[in-house]
Length: 70
Image 1: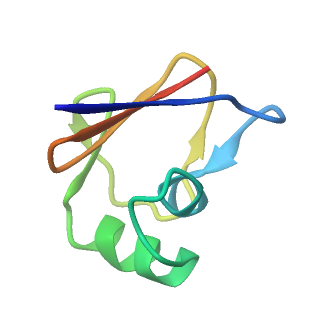
Image 2 (image 1 turned 60 degrees about the vertical axis):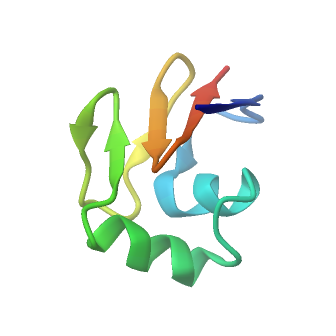
Image 3 (image 1 turned 90 degrees about the vertical axis):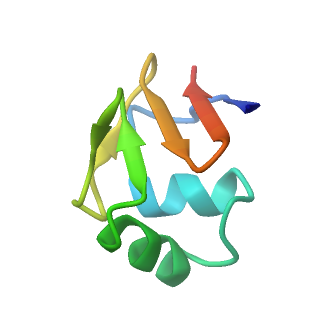
């Protein structure tokens, strides 16, 4: 599994933007499509809210990649 450490620059980042910033999708729009497809898990649970607020300490998984938000 690929692990990506992401250093948060504020209080939170929206899920679709996190996928883009971590390099897992090409754009925020592509991130929204991936989230809507049910392919993204946040802390082990499927997340369908495209602009879900992701905060420090949470883990986001897409395929074989896992993002740890710090």
